[in-house]
Length: 213
Figure (spheres, rainbow, N blue to C red):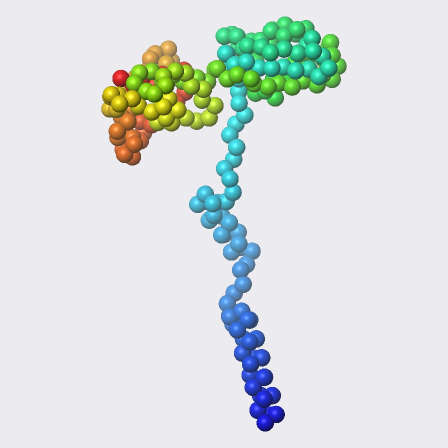
């Protein structure tokens, strides 16, 4: 009787070991397999978040606050003029259009150096007016809309409250100045929302005007 029990326990132990062990002959993942899987994930858009966009570049009409630590007389909130310049105490006119806030910070620090050694300068954009597009006509809210990231015609129409009931959905167009000439770019709302003529859903540029008859 004891021999039978002992044999039964041995059989169960062997069966359990077989079940939890990996399949005989099944290869374990190699480093190259892992790298291959990672590459496939990246190509399919599943490997992490997309890279951040470029830093904002200021332009005429924007308002920036320039703060110099412990130097209130050298600090100022200024409007970037149409010529792309600002006026500051001590340093007079500075060309800042097309620069990032960090680049302006470095420029102001350099210009202040003869007057304030190792100035601690902070630059903040307080109002964005240089990247506007305009929406006119039969929309919920006509007006100017700042675009600080890529924005399509369909997206700006959404920002403008959508189309009014009597809007001509097939007759919308974008007016754009290019090389000194005005272009008229068609936009068929009905087709675009159906997934057709999607090439008409262009990315807008500052100064563009979307007209909804």
